[in-house]
Amino acid sequence: MKRFITDTILCSLFIFGIMGAFASLTFLKIFDAFDPIGEMFSDFELTDIVFSQLQDDPIADERIVMVNIGTLNREGIARQIEIINKYNPAIIGLDVMLDAPKEWPEDSALTRVLSETPNIVIGEKLVGLEEETGQFAMTIKPEDHIVQEAKLGYVNLITDARTQEDLKMCREFTPDEVVGNDTRYAFPVRLAYAYDSVATEEFLKRDNDIEVINYKGNIMSFSSAQYGMKYFALDVYDIFDENFAPDLFEDKIVIMCFMGQYLGDTETTEDFYFTPMNENYVGKAKNDMFGGVIHANIISQILDDDPIDQMSDRTEIVLGILFCLFNVFLFKIVYGAMPRWYDGITKLFQLFEVMVLATLMIYLLLVFNYKADFTLAMIVIALSGDSLEVYHGVVKNLFSKERRKEVFRVNRRFWEYQ
Image (cartoon, rainbow, N blue to C red; front, side, top):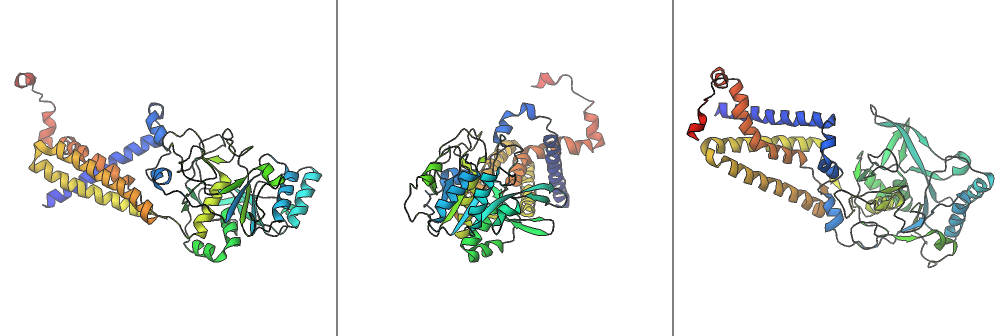
């Protein structure tokens, strides 16, 4: 039995060694040119199915109103703010970079309006992420004469994209970041705090560096899941023409942001993201949500006390090790007791395990708002059956002097016995 247990551990180490070798080759991108299928699935997670296919139709969040600024200059944005202010919003969020100085008429108009709007949060951008410390070096923010008494919130969203044209998949955000000696808060966190400080403080007590975004809906369908509209949106000239009910903005969170040159513009790539709500969750072709609407989803999640808990990396690794040891132990019994049945039994059991874990991942997120990650466990399950055969048929034989000699004693008349 002791030898059996030792073999189980050594075979498990062999499996993780294989995984490490493949991971190194993947890191070096040796096979990227030959892997179009892997590239297609690279931005897909199994739990995306929950957001794109399995959720109930959303209930409209009447606390939040979206306003498209289109390609307006600062004078036009100032005019929009003036009109919105007449209807007593609780807080206005301006998701636009105001760092570069403009001509005096533009800047003076916006500066004047902002000085008359104490209840506003303006976007800033964190830059210069230092890998060693995990901190940003500086912020790009409006000049002081523009900001005045306004609060600032960073609009950075987590993606792998380097440019606006790259695929921008957004699943997570950071509630706060450290810049120098200061703690900066995310744009949606600032807006949520201004609207409901108690709910926001409860959310921040989770003290997570990264939070999973609990997507619930969009302003309209941009190749996203066919759900109802979650957030009411007004286009540029709806504001100028005051084409809305008088009480639409009263005591609401108003997010002013770019949502295309007009509502429904799908040709732009500016601040336009892929999200797990995209109906085409494999091989995505069209973006489905603007950055401002992602901020709205985050605000809803904070105010509704509806966060998503996430499995830690440590738990994922421990589960992967346990599944590996369990499968190797079980398959060694089959290998020794029923060798002729080995391939059939192990393949069926592996398929069953993977299906159960995949279903469990979806169920936990859908019902309990818990994002489990059994990826490592699934990989070791998939490798365990064949790897055990390689371990017994090659690795162990290499450490036997007598069996190594068999390599050079090939039966040249083997076909006579076939």
